[in-house]
Length: 199
Image 1 (cartoon, rainbow, N blue to C red):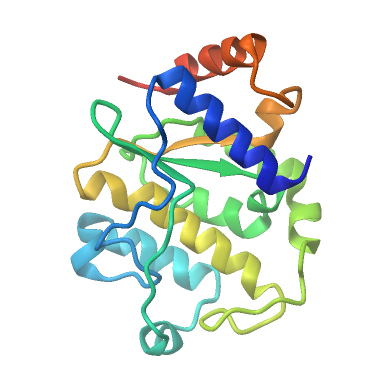
Image 2 (tube, one colour):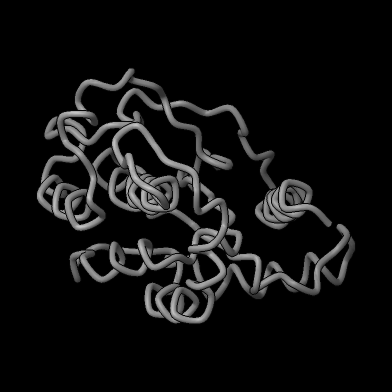
């Protein structure tokens, strides 16, 4: 099963378990590809530190074309959270560095320690993934990997600053045995969600 197909399947099952159709085209005014004080508020110093730790170029960041970012899915109403499905390439050395800079008071709907452990296990493979790719504000070999880690932080830091609940993350290793939407898969996802959702 390809990455995109697995993401689609898991998102569908999560929606079925929650009893809500996921919104796949949700945009927010504050969810753009640059970090600003207006959008990040009290978390600005955190994202700024992460950006420089990942060797980002601030002048290029400020001058690049502003674009809205998309989340994998959004669940509204009583849930009110962004959902992200993390494939192996999200568990890079850059992502580990960024996670280590997260404030202790930040809330999560996933285990931050488990994500760090997954980074340690999979960073070599993740770092090799499209290693030659650069990004506008991470203009070096491996820059696309650093940019991915940087933008993953947006999905963790921004929502709580804008009246959303903490982002829910599921990674591909947690659902390796799920290949179809059936009763057994729904039960497994229901059990997994109960360990993640803190409300």
